Image (cartoon, rainbow, N blue to C red):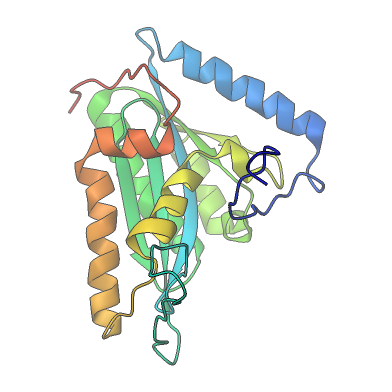
Length: 225
């Protein structure tokens, strides 16, 4: 199979058949223009926001093991989870996050307040790339977005276009590397392990950039406060 040009790898889920290709390409071009604008002394920052669930029942992925033997990871029994809401700054590698038990608009609102403080501190408005998840339609959240429009401008992605949201790369890294193939002794240990992994993104911008934008050779990250 290798001689025929095949490789052994995990398949990838796709929503390509469901998305509007014209809307996808239009959004892709607009985001590329925003990225290029950051190469100059831009008056804005480009952030990507999304949420993801992490389960006590660990994600299983490929791992090295003796030939002829299969690794077995014990099940914790009853599953529990955390919902993580995050925001990633393109080019600078900054990462903000908020953890809560389930997906709600309240978590998004808490994350937005962190971004507003960032915008006020730097004097640069934030263009925030967001998808159209159900929690984002809450009336309270829509009011918040209206009240903070001087600091945050939302770039709504078309439906079924997760490939345009770069923070998805961070979630993938966490689930396939930091949180995979592990049996946690308790939900508390699981929570602490997840928090440490998220803090690594927050404390190491260059590492975060290497995961979210591995093909981007030029970084514009500066030592802004």
